[in-house]
Amino acid sequence: MAFYKIVGTGDFIDNPDQRMTQDVEKACRILCTDLLGPVVLSPFIILFYTYRTYASSGWYGPVAIYAYFALMTIANKFLLSPIVNLVNEQEKKEGDLRQRHMEVRANVESVAFYRSGLLENVLANQKLNTLLNTQKDLFKRRFYLGLSTNGFDYFGSILSYLIIAVPIFITHDYDGLDGPALNGEVSKNAFFYMYLIFSFTRLLNLSEKFGDMAGVTHRVMELVEELRRLHSDCLETDRPPSTVPSSVVVVASDPDDDQKPNMSKTIEELHGKQLSLERDNDDEEEAQYLLGNS
Image 1 (tube, rainbow, N blue to C red):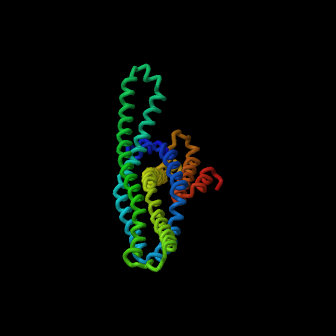
Image 2: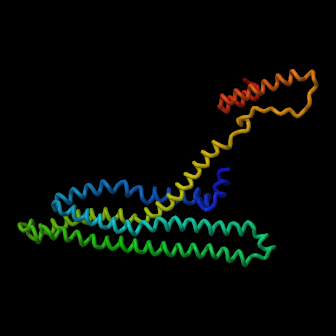
Image 3: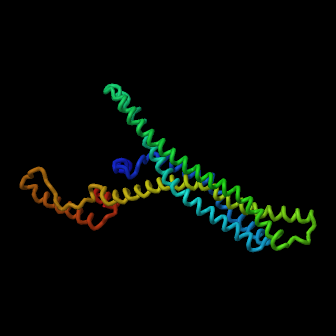
């Protein structure tokens, strides 16, 4: 009954069968295989290398890297927001095209008898064209997001050398070191800076996965909320017939005069049971009471 009501509600919940199977599977797979590990481990790695960066370069090293990461996050936020809506739209269009093919396959005999193959071809191509247009828009958005992410990855390595240049050319902290010692110090500090930048950029590289996750999760949560609403409506309206209040007992036959006292007694018993049911709403007790097991 709930599935029938969801399908008959219109365009609010499209392709509920796809949401129950493909979208739920995709959301779980992205969360468990692509996002869970990096998201859980990254805070500990970032904290450790933030401390090492601060110990080797002072306050300006972590501040520069964190500011660079904030700039990357803001840029990716504007590029990621349209991707979430496009992923949701792509899943909807794919479900519509799959449903169109299923309808043609289920009614292939009727299509052949009515010679409506050309019409079905036109309708299927319309669904396909809308899906392709949505996928083109999604490809463009993902291209810009990938271009931004790779660009920030490239300039992140340049930032690490700019941070190293400060104690060498500006504050002259390494003037007392000879060549081999200076090379070792620069290599050690560069590793700390670059790994901290790499930890941030690895999180940003998950932007596309976050977009896909947000798109399919939105579809799944729409279905869950609609199912909960239908469940609440069913609890209020689809009650068993025995719980429907009724104080009227209709007797179809015309009993003899000598049966009237028994009939009156029966009516009083039924009316008494009905009043008792109106006071007691427990389904199990109600069933036992009507069966005469009270």
